[in-house]
Length: 254
Ligand code: NAD
Ligand code: ZN
Figure 1: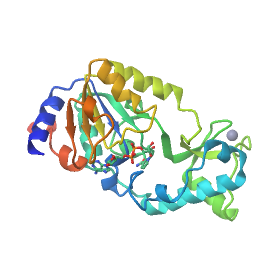
Figure 2: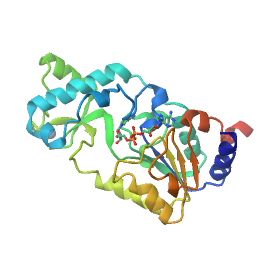
Figure 3: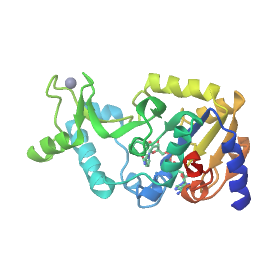
């Protein structure tokens, strides 16, 4: 891991227009389990597809019940060492932006501004009306849900279904966000994958596109990924351990 960190420090030291591409693995040290870990909340329940959510009140009730259970399990999660490292690269002017598959809002909490963040799968820390797009806080939904005895509330403006601002199976990916991530991928000099199994498409096309457009590809993940053979540097280790202090922040020299 020492040699790998030296190689990584050199790549990151020369990075001027990078992309940090993050998956569930960057948030596991914050107490949020990834998709694959056995016993995690995700593995206990089959995901509720988008069509079911829209067409069935019972599905909406169940989706919100699960969301509030998750809130209780890890609603207070704070950014970890990986998030801090990425926010530091951005502050140092090394990144075009951060592209995440996560829905936990931890990049924002670590100081990444919205205009530099693409959330490919949306955000679970607030809700939206699927018909008129107006925004609701989780606490508002929670109160309505509890007051009604476990019934999901509808939009107070248009009666539309209210859903966490995440992308469900069967729901269209946000076109604007995909386009922004694609444009960055075509322009970046280094594409750094942190904690993604790279099996969820279309998100996993981005590192391939970046590589084909000439970027160097770095993958940091505990276990092998499908795209390891394509990468310039692969590190199979814990993200926090690998990134912590690998690039001294310029502030450290002042
Ligand atoms: P994934 O669970 O498929 O893969 C995560 C990868 O990270 C795994 O290969 C695992 O070995 C690795 N990993 C876990 N902890 C690590 C650590 N500390 N250091 C290094 N590697 C580590 O996750 P994915 O590829 O992001 O896709 C899962 C989907 O589920 C995404 O679409 C995402 O929207 C959703 N999801 C989000 C969250 C979240 O927001 N935090 C959590 C779970 C799932
Ligand atoms: Zn509405």
